[in-house]
Image (tube, rainbow, N blue to C red; front, top):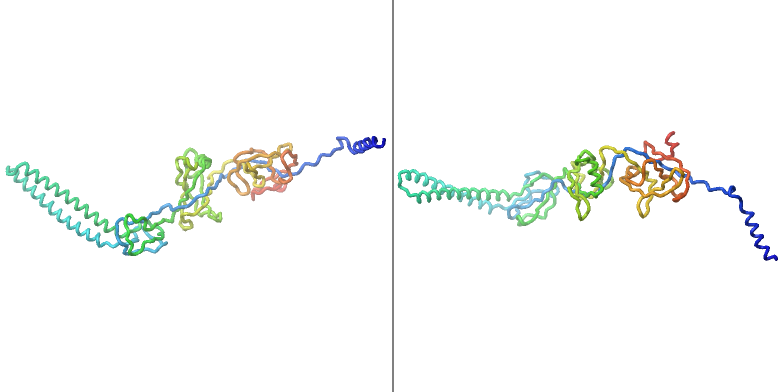
Length: 382
């Protein structure tokens, strides 16, 4: 009997501890800070990696063969167009000029003689003393003498040009590089570049645009590639912009099928010579005219395997997750490409206290116009 009464006693104890449904108290909603997305005038920006190269450069080569007699420059210094850089021994070429000049004199004498013979023959031929065959022969001799004279003049010009080529000059003004050529070296057209000259006053940055970036660029330009539709800046390693903004001077007309990118270049003035060829730099593109868009505060952004996401609060206080696509950074915020719309509430404070499906009590945050940072609305409006 005692064992049979035990379950009845336990049930009575359990039932006595249960209250009515009205007596159950729901846990209070978690308080979080939310920011309502509003439309702002945004200067669209994006960054692209690039490598610099000289806008104007030339590799100096020898046009004739010869032994280097003098090296007339200091490596790394500035040279002007026309300055002599190398001087080759020119004895052989001077001798060729003398021979060509003598040959020209002989050809000129032969041409004068042939012309006089033809003139005399024409006078005699009027009296019937010469046959038609003799006249043809004299005309042919005069024409051959004219051709030989022209050929001798061309040979003399070429030999003088070759002699001039024994002094190798700078084709452009700029800074001259290193050279392995010293006095006594035998150089010629097959020797390859002797030295390189770079004009440092302008520098070109080479970069590649993805399909999306290329589409954005074309959209920013409108129907044509207007250079004034955006500005481009070059950022150095310390993230400081180069003093002078640049211009995009080339965008290829087709997408490279192997890389899926479009080749392009931007040109920058480099009067202070801070930029040198071969540097890795970052190009910052900025639209010239602001356009309406949405900015997402950086403290609202989290990341998972699918990419960036935010915690979204509906008007009933329910929490959900939303994947987003971000554009360029704008100070303490990101340009929003897709995933949210005007009026959405994103959690910016208390993210560590909530999970999807929870119910929260939102308090509103606003952007401080002076700093761009977020703060509770009541603080902003004071």
